[in-house]
Image 1 (cartoon, each protein chain N blue to C red):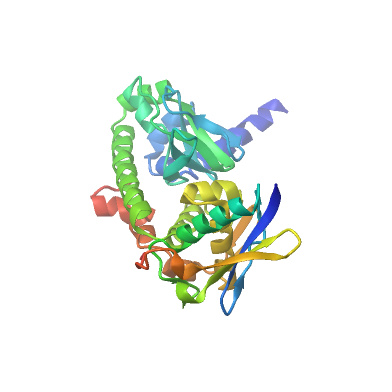
Image 2: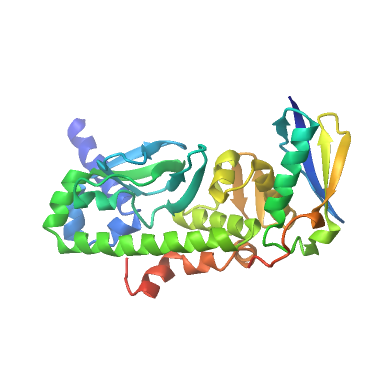
Length: 81
Length: 248
């Protein structure tokens, strides 16, 4: 088990200040994809920026970046409102 | 000493009961009938008031706290179908006699609640047109709300639903500082905790809220309303009743 942090990065960084305890990096990949789907579903973007500009950057407890995901690979791009 | 203290306690409790808008809407003589049986209780976060299938033995009228009604899944997950604050009550249909709860009712935000035994409330309702009317009108509003939330969950994005939910919590507790456990907040919106953390941080970056674990302060209600889906406006207490042709 270890703590994993899922930050969002564009011109600004949205910090996952809490982190999530997961068994390994494979589980962190699954978690990252699930969170990305939840964020992008029926949504076009965040903080006035399209999802195409956003990346999810996943770090371990030491601050090392393990992998990143393009948020544009998830979601349906529909406006939710 | 006891004789001096007693009237003060009764007075305080009666004032507290009127902090619930359903009770406050009753004619004074009707509320006076209930006053004898209403008790004021303090409940913390996470108190389970009803489980699905439980007989409804007590009715709760939030004064300052908030109750969530949850549908439980076979996987142990829970989905919120309604929140009840000072504008409403939980267990009102218990007065119909022998009714059981369809949902779990749990305190989302701790606080003060007025409570009365369902059997006693039923007895009073049988002899009181205002109380029966109140039950009927509020049940209609709650049904409309559940339908709106169902549509909201299916249609609107997570950020809009989170903003709607925060505004409703503030309205229904009468405070802009909300003691919200993050895991519970994620459950209410139906997403992972990480998703709520990131969305809350994004709202904080925009200056709409101040957020730290376990506590959210609403800083810019107008900004939050712009981020929320239209469901917030539709379900506003002062709008939904009149929209249905009922005045709670």
